[in-house]
Image 1 (cartoon, rainbow, N blue to C red):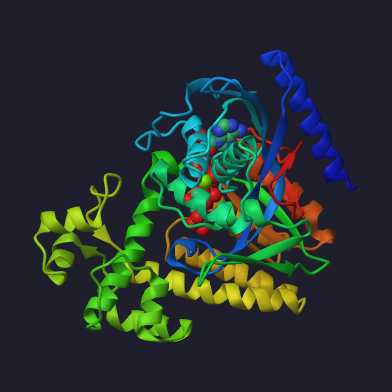
Image 2 (image 1 turned 60 degrees about the vertical axis):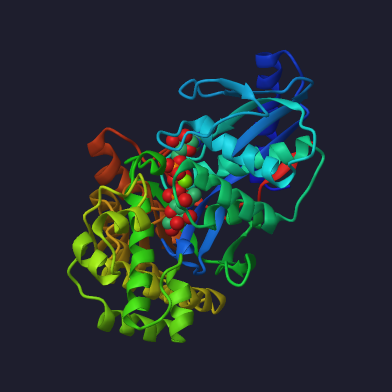
Length: 444
Ligand code: ADP
Ligand code: NG1
Ligand code: MG
């Protein structure tokens, strides 16, 4: 057993003790669901393209006891997350201002929808997490997947992990964020010591990617929190990608009036990723598209367009940068293939270069970086990181740098002195050397 596994067992035992103290009862089982760091492939999962993340040691643990009633009683060891209870047969998920318990209920709902006729016990649950929240390391999906696994195990059922990941991705959208499926897939399908290439088409698969032995990944939290459920940055990008695909289909004389992703557009045009990027430069203009222009293009009244294309969280948006967003997606999708090849051939410098290009594209074309992330990236590069980029949705959260063991301490020390200390923070607790962790599991 390695150090990380021993550490997990100790934390599981601690949570069982806390459960006993809290509820004066013994937990039946504990679920562990990890967060993740995405190495490359940002904001392309919801466009149907492959991504390359790995799970991390930081996780959400849930201790569970079945009860005879029909109640879900949910507590958290962190007092900032208030306790909650509801009927297991009748609860609402709040998508306008989601609380932590709403994420949990998304996971419960995933299993209820899959097994509508199975009788459900009541549940008493205690949650503890150490994935930095709202930092792009996917604490939300770790919570959703942990809740789904707890609900599944509590009714004595099991499901193929790919199916469970797709269910969790669908149900996490009840929170109101139109996410792709990367986070749930890596949480449920990860493998210790390996990254995974997650493919969504034609069906969800996760294949093993061995990382070069000398590769070390340093994750640094900018400490700028970005809660996806309470902001609309993310959903605006999802809409921009969909509109870019629809405009390109329309001007190419193809069927456009249905939900399409950029990968569907690529298939319809029968082009490879490089050629579809060139076509994007020809078909879409650089200036933002206004609502007026889009309504005219789609031959709709303005109000009809808003109703058709936008949602509660995006209807305030007046203009859309379709060309820049689509170019990011196609080029990033291409970088994922090249990163995978570089990884398998141990071309670590090329991996770093691709991460660098990815960060620049996120910053300039997708506009999802943050000045604090750019600062971490440039400090890390100056200390010899081979590549450094934001990870997760961005607009705050973490950056991941690729380096080798000999450079780790100078990167961490520089971040401590030049980034954290001037902000009254320390690298300790905010910078992690990440090794690929295992998938979510049950401890009976
Ligand atoms: P990310 O997935 O990048 O961490 P999100 O904005 O998607 O960020 O999700 C963050 C939310 O997940 C938090 O606001 C909180 O509701 C929930 N969450 C994260 N960690 C915990 C935890 N340990 N306990 C309870 N809820 C948590
Ligand atoms: P974070 O920031 O970890 O919640 C989000 C999405 C992913 C993916 C990335 C950007 C969810 C649950 N997660 O991650 O699907 O699109 O942003 O690559 O919506
Ligand atoms: Mg999230």
